[in-house]
Image (cartoon, rainbow over all chains, first blue to last red; front, side, top):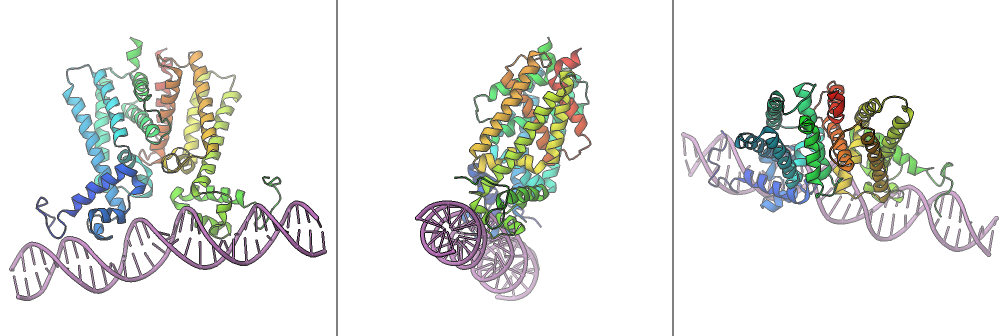
Length: 207
Length: 207
DNA sequence: GCGATATTTTGACACTGTCAAGATTGATTG
DNA sequence: CAATCAATCTTGACAGTGTCAAAATATCGC
């Protein structure tokens, strides 16, 4: 049986799982994935080196759990934007989402890197749980793009799937450039986001 | 004085610098940056652990050198495409470049990751030489986009700079998704590239 | 209280990047 | 040609990493 009462302190440390997840996220936010070592993490939480291995099979598994929380956040954002601003024109809502998405990716850049970086997806192996959640999020995105196409906010001769992929690639590309410190200027961010939106919502410029 | 005759074998090994660069590139192509360790590299070349440190200050310096060669390749590609196909319509040339760029990024994916990855630009520090070459390449790209805008192949209400940045971000985003194994299907590649081009060359679809 | 089970610890191993000091080699100069 | 000097390479060492095996400890069901 899994731990059924995670609130009260159980066993020695008292919900070590959550502690690990939390401080690991902190450490990543501070200095990136590379500055997170299992040993330092254990140290900081106050347990011995190998204690974490009873809650996470791997360092990989730990990273996947953190990435997963990132996907949860983005998914929440998408749902909120989509539902809350139901009165505003769809194009405006879309624009707002793009800006928020990029801002969020920048705000939690290290976690963002983890979500889409090679550390998990190429070197490591994504957890089933992570796989599922990321796929689910892309489905949400796809469904939104589909709606925007149907309502002619997006006009494209290509399939909805390809459009969704390329649009998200654009968004992701911008975030990467920013996060990887290639376009270091954060001041240019807003303008770049707008340019991207203009490129996507063609008919907006054609009116 | 710097070594003046790099062709003939000098000192013990005989052009260890080139040997290191070459086999390091090989090793990266095989298993990524992570599979390249200074010690294994030295082993494979046939020298002792610390021998490479007389030719590259750091592991970082070595990686920068490899990344730099990648930029050389991409720069060459751009120049070639731009000059060789001077008779064809500009839009066609651009489309061709996009496809070739993505194919190249996929073919040398590990090196591509190095060129734009956090390993150098965030964790490490780019060599001055690398900095210069990468900037120079972006200037080439910018100049091309400028030309395409002037000749109305690209129609945008935004500044040329922003357009160049966002367009390249799109390209880069696609490459990342591919290389990071997020859109694993390589078969979708051609279609996605076309969709991206359609998005960029708006007036093509408006005819 | 007892035994089973979950949790944590200690010890160990193979690996990593890289610094310091010494050994070797090649080129240069007298 | 011999001696000097600098470039090049090697060996030894250190702190750090992820993680496995075995031993120690705590908690829970009975």
